[in-house]
Image (tube, rainbow, N blue to C red; front, side):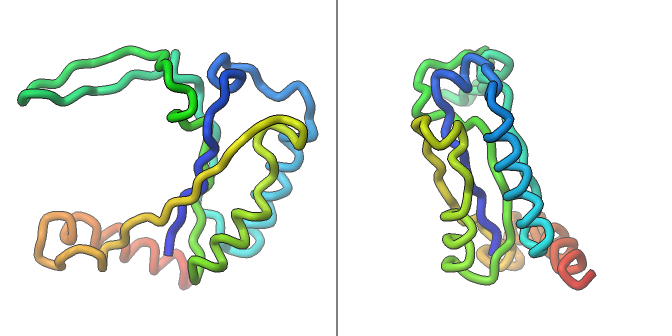
Length: 144
């Protein structure tokens, strides 16, 4: 089971301000090292502010590019950690250990979401066919 731990953005992270205190970065580094040693870590990264990004809006059969920044900070993502756990409970335990993303004294929030897996789709359906090679690669990695 794969889970994404999503770090919600703040006005400070959206302003592109990096933590001025190495404590946050060190705590995050230590946490991700623990995940890696446990064989749980799949990927992790911070995201640049939305001022460096764009969205594609689909409407009436057309696409429109909308350049950032985007206003609703509470709906934005500042970073993520992707893990593979044996159960929802194991993933929750790892999430509980996640360091305060902006420092112990700063407000912050993470959200955890389970990813769909290939077996969640019909094997002969389009999504099942495109996800099957990804699932096989994941299983091979787990065996190593």
